[in-house]
Length: 127
Image 1 (cartoon, one colour):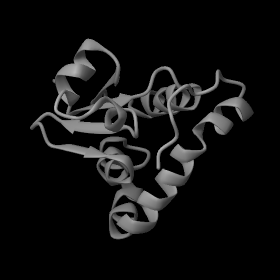
Image 2 (spheres, rainbow, N blue to C red):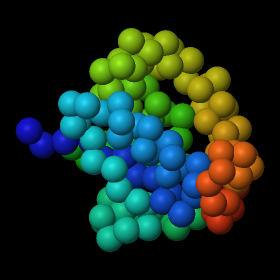
Image 3 (spheres, helix red, strand yellow):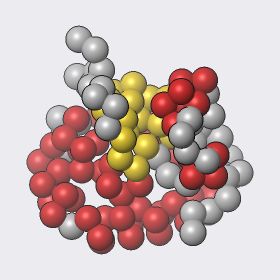
């Protein structure tokens, strides 16, 4: 069975890499492909976005080609992960707060990387 979606993440950011690893552990059905944003596959899937916008957040690209990013990707991502599928309707009912929470975490991912013992995130923080 082909993966249902591709999750693109900043592999150079310790926090982002650990978050992607956590997602991979929850993907026991193998529905996701995890791809670094700065890879050739990332260029292919996100080539229409300026580089700064690519690294601004994670991106979920469905097999259909539909792309969601930042907080908007949390609900569709939850639907793909058996342990979190129950959370998808809640997240999707609160798009504003979820996106604000995502942006807050993204803005502080360098600090979160250091606190978690990972390398500091070299990407500029999200606005």
